[in-house]
Amino acid sequence: AQKITQTQPGMFVQEKEAVTLDCTYDTSDQSYGLFWYKQPSSGEMIFLIYQGSYDEQNATEGRYSLNFQKARKSANLVISASQLGDSAMYFCAMSYHNAGNMLTFGGGTRLMVKP
Amino acid sequence: DSGVTQTPKHLITATGQRVTLRCSPRSGDLSVYWYQQSLDQGLQFLIQYYNGEERAKGNILERFSAQQFPDLHSELNLSSLELGDSALYFCASSVSRNNEQFFGPGTRLTVL
Image (cartoon, rainbow over all chains, first blue to last red; front, side, top):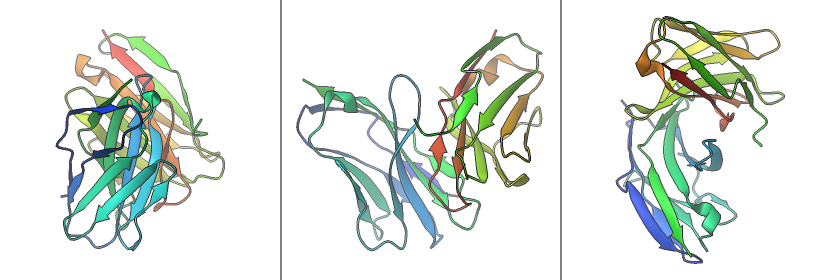
């Protein structure tokens, strides 16, 4: 069974600094996808970034980048130049490409950006 | 705005009742997924439909059922509601079975 672990329940970061949110996963499958979602206090789930297991380059989307280390089974999210609006819950998720692509989520990390 | 719509936004009901949650996927998306987010269970996959057919089932109770209609909108039916069913229910859609999923704003269900 696939499992996603986010070991940081909560984190603080100073505005304008970079922050790394950790995510490790457990799978024996070769074809899978890794996702990060942001959930602000309003509750919606906002898609941030995606990394396929066969992608050789780390994914980037604006201030978000995914540090994908396949051998270590980690998919850490890096947010550069943190902004106050980045304060939210962040979820790492995984899907199996051969199993309908449903997402398995980690427990989340609450990020708080300090002014 | 993800392009996925869900109604209603909030729902308050009593134990034993039945409710229907509705989801309209993004234009062109064939896959619809339902997820439940609760304080004790976190975010859990419930069920997936692809172009009208059920494709995968997760931790969905027998009291819950879903369907996807020819116009691709989906409904999640929750019956014999219990206090523990109180949660945020999300619908997500994607173009195919292997693409990124975009979430709707969710329906917050409160069972009293």
